[in-house]
Image (tube, rainbow, N blue to C red; front, side):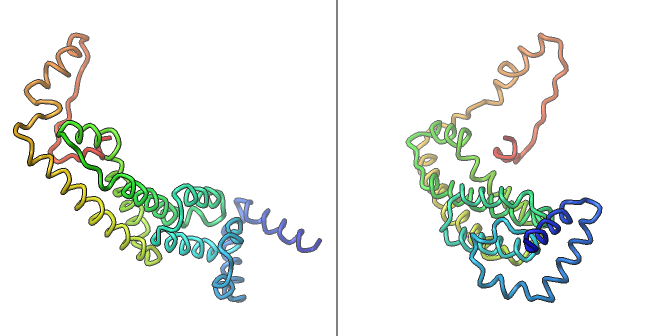
Length: 228
């Protein structure tokens, strides 16, 4: 009964805004005094998912996610589910970008494993497929890089960052690029989806009739997935 009252007190303390900072300081002190890190080394991953008494628990979970994703031993849905569980926990805000990095990493690997070796018979087929679906691979990669940089490239993610660089470069850019080059080599005439010469008639003329102001942004090297 006393143990229940203790955990109730801890829970109320964490969730009371004006005392949150004090809880964090006391939690860190207790963590050091009782050598929580050593105890967590032998903890079962699943048993600590709902616990947020110490920040070391979040680091343990992130470390496990990094390893499992790097080994491709966990599904995208399971990673998302775990991060969802942690979203409302005490330390999540401090480690948000670490968690987001694991989510984007798992999504990226799954997408590359699914679409990385895609081949096409025609130029238009490739352009349509990329604009409808496969752009998300490059977009997810940039989301990972953005989150990783937000962590100041925390060392806890080093194994995962190395994995992502290899998978993205070797299993996506190199393989997909080679397959796409074969399509280009067989293309006798370059047929852009939207010819610049037709831009005015296709996009400006009919809008101009409505007497609306129209702004056209012209950008060189604006990547498609960023535009999306």
